[in-house]
Amino acid sequence: MSLLDQDGVRVTVHDAVATITLTHPERRNAQTPAMWHALAEAGRRLTGDIRVVVLRAEGVSFSAGLDRRALTPEGIEGQLSLFELAGRPAAERDATIAGYQEAFTWWRRPDLVSIAAVQGHAIGAGFQLALACDLRVCAEDAQFAMRETSLGLVPDLGGTHPLVTLVGYARALEICATGRAVRAAEAERLGLANLVVPADQLAAATDDLAAALLAAPRGALIETKALLRAATGNDYDTQRAAERAAQGRRLTDLAGLD
Image (cartoon, rainbow, N blue to C red; front, side, top):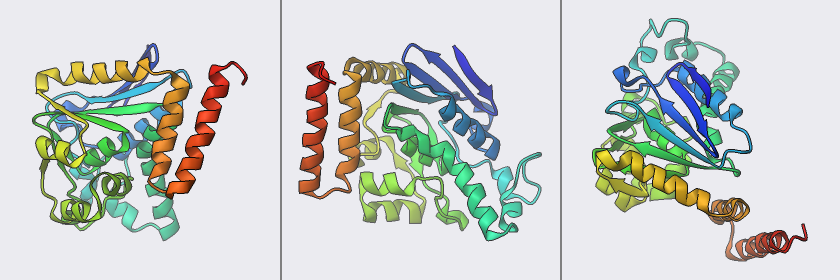
C-alpha cells in the first residue's frame, strides 16, 4: 500500500513495516526543504499498526546532503533559499529551522524502531538523516561526512545529539570540524553502523533485521527501547527503578492482569 509519493519521498506499507524511499537518484538524493516537508508528513501518516520503519534510497548514494542550489542566491524555484532565510527575523528563522527538523525527529518514536539502509555517500543532511534512525545497516561503500562546519554552518537537523551519544564528544568534534569521510569499516568500529555488508546484500540484511525486530513481542520491545534511551540520562539508581517499573508492567501484561 502506498501512503505518499512526492518531492523525492515514497512511503509504502506492508503488514507492520513501512518503507520510506528517497527517490531522486539523479541528484544523489540531495535534500531540499520540500523533501523535508514530505519526510515530516510521512511520519504523521504512519499509524500505530506500524512497528518497523525502513529508510532506503534509490541510486548509488543514500543522500549527498543539502541540494547546493539552496546555498545560492537563486535558490530552488518555489522553495526558501538559505540566503532568504538569513534575512528573516530571528524568530522566523528559528521557526523555519524547527519545521525542517521535524523531518528528522519522529524516527525515534517510542512505538516503532527505524532502520536506515545506507549505501554510498551520506553527507551532511544525509548523515543526519541516517543518525535520526535507531539503527543503521551499511553497504561496504558507505561513507559518512558532516560537512556543514566546512561550509561555515553547523549541523542543525538533529544530528549532533545522536552523534555524540554514539561516538563520544571528542570523536564527534573531530568528525564535524574536519568534515572528513568516515567509511563503513570505521563506522562499524565507532558504533555508527550496526552492520556492514556487501552492497548487493544491503536490502536482504536490512529485511532480515526488520524481521528479527518483528519477532519480539511488541510491548517488550517498546519497553526495552524506552529503557535504553533513558539510560543515557539516568543515574544508576534511577535506571534500576525504571527497570523495575517496566518489568512490573510486562509481568502484569503477560499474566493478563492489565
